[in-house]
Picture 1: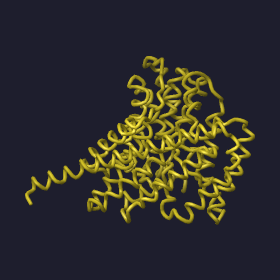
Picture 2: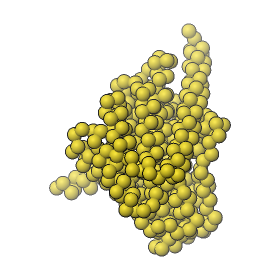
Picture 3: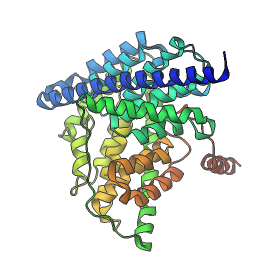
Picture 4: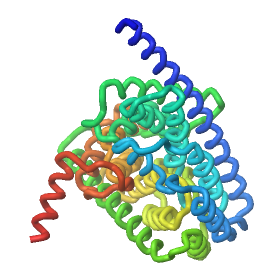
Length: 413
């Protein structure tokens, strides 16, 4: 077969993969988001369901304990398979994480949705490995497609989704052949989701200040605070996870966690911190919200996910960042909506080690006018958030991690 014909066949193959995978993942994400809206509305009208958190937690824990296998690793399984391919992502990961997340939100767990969409996307996309008889390098591209399509569809941000998938796998390991499929699948999944009637939340920043020494110093300071908050989120998540490993029978972990959460939610006397928390995120752009909302959400989310409930970390990170930025209005002289947007993106940048995707996300969601402030806050947060992030399987290479390794060596002397 001639070289030209081989290239044409290969091109057609990848066009087909991107289209089919993008449509399937976009449709799955649309179904997931619709389900999430339904159970969230149902829960808010039937608050008694929160008392079932321990029972639902046990059901989720038992489902993963007896049926999950390696899928319990979640997003880390996708990263591990990209870094060191061993075996195909089980298709059962998609329904398991879907059911687990829907049940978590139905009962009032504090969790997100990105992890679910990414895992569903990765599980669906990796089925093309055997279907198209892909080799090891091509399989890595497939995993990138799954992640980019899932992220793009669930947040309505195709550029950020494509970059997130590339950045989380470490840019230096990415081939040029990965880039176009990542963007193509992200856009196809995004538009499929929109076509199926999904509407994403929009945010508005009314005032963008002029660039000056004061605004730049203020932005740097805010980024520092956001980075330290991301570090606290990661470390507290690791602490809760370590504590729960002391419970040997895994289904008991979310059961006990559910008991604690029911008590905590009852003591708080509000449901604003459970579930996704989208209304509170929106409020943080318009006026003052609770000064401690970010801390309460941080505690509830790290505890919920470490106990074994399902969902993602990203939307809670948006909540934490936006409400923290809102609270900083009393310390930092920047408009409240701008601070909320900076926190929204920068805490995510610090916790995921994905500063470039975070900047793209901020520009897609808040506009290019806020880009310089969001960019500086994200980069500062990235460098001040520590060497550990929410994805333990993520490769840690580059100047940031060399710096932290150097500091660690000094401290060990």
